[in-house]
Length: 301
Image 1 (cartoon, one colour):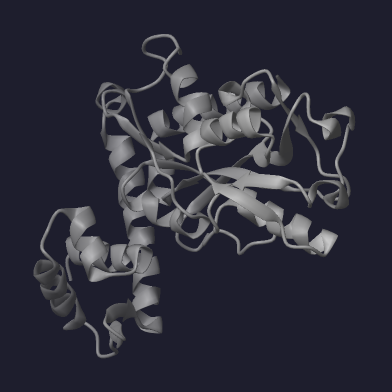
Image 2: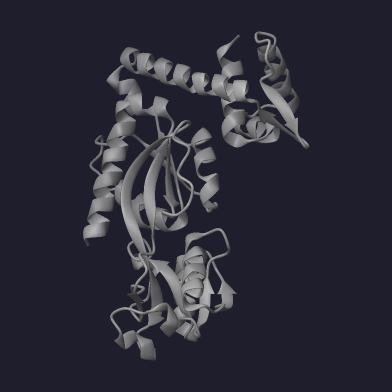
């Protein structure tokens, strides 16, 4: 049994397919299959099985994948003790986040005094909620959002660091007749035309809840995930939108205002997702603390 074989099994648990593992590790799918076959020779119980055309882990495979994560964490802890401080500080930290969090906090993180944080490498990832955990295979830190009523993050595979709860509000032009109200009920807004995200994203989830409470289907005219574009459509067309209270603020024109939804605690939890082994790296912890401080300033602004 070799460490790279355990890593491949762990990646299969997180990414869900041989092709995805091959892409993440920059090897061929056949190489992934060969390593899994070599690993299998060490165990009498099958570690993988076919599910249609996909190769998935058995219960025993999942158990070993969990152990592989523990091994990686232990090795990372030992490695952190051996490395010098200078070596750690020179290693870039890879950070991914959904679009609106990237627009809001990526740039402020670069304004920290030189030497206070390690080099940072940012990427934006516009994925559905259930796809965020798999990004920890590629990035050191993943800024993710989750609706409270949905399944929790898989904390048997990743560590979760809560950052903030962000309300989702109705976006409305300041000259719209409904703008005079401090809060808007589902019954007040359901007959209006809407611009919301595609299904599977939090604004669409909130509008579905509004429709359920109002007992009527919404009239959706535009499906747009980018909040700046959605805000521009609210400004130009008279449509209503569903936008996050904090992270959409910088992308909105001053003619667009936000109103909470009466009787509905609509919002999303923003978290950092990270593999446990990275938490042993002091520079990673410094970046996490900087993210926390930036989010606190955003929420309190």
